[in-house]
Image (cartoon, rainbow, N blue to C red):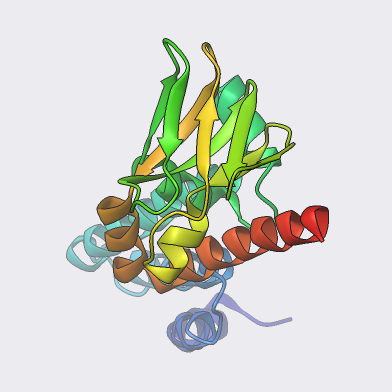
Amino acid sequence: MPTMEFILPQLVHVGAILYLICFLFRDQILLRTFAIAGDLAYVTYYFNVADQPLWGAILWNIPNVGINLYMIAAILRDRGTSSFSANELKLYGKLPSIDPGNFRKLLRAGRWVTASSDTILTKEGEMPDDIYFVLEGDVDIQKGGRKIDVSPGLFIGEIAFLTNKPATATVTVAKDALYYAWPRGALQLAREKDNDLAGAIGTVLNIDLAGKLARTS
């Protein structure tokens, strides 16, 4: 049976190996979990290797463990939906292919609006200031003198946003309609700062656009 005299020196190698393994993972949970395990191996070694614990080395490893535990908790929170409000949960359910973390970033770029009266969101031939997602309420779409029947649960202004061209229809929402509005500049800036978010935004907008084309074809 291995003795403590044999095991103790191996902890340095175990800690180093665990640290090397952690950098093989893209998943932040696994990366930080193995980093914590490496730190604990080092702490155990520093505590037992000499007649007195090597407190200087131990104290510098403890913050590493604490920071990684905090970040794991933050990542798990970002991956969950428990902190979403009722309306946020409804909106999240309408946006396929987006994870909770990117959804939170998307929310930070915009705002909730409840229409105080019938409100024109976009005008045909004009560049809209915002891009919208109508969650609840009646939506009236007029395009080329033709009315298009739609239900709530759709983006408005996404074609203008994706193509940087004027709106292709005049869209009005009824009084008390609930929608989320993103200023074009803020949403574009969010895309430029975060490639992962940019991909998620592109996916949800293209899915919404494909659904509209299927309904009108």
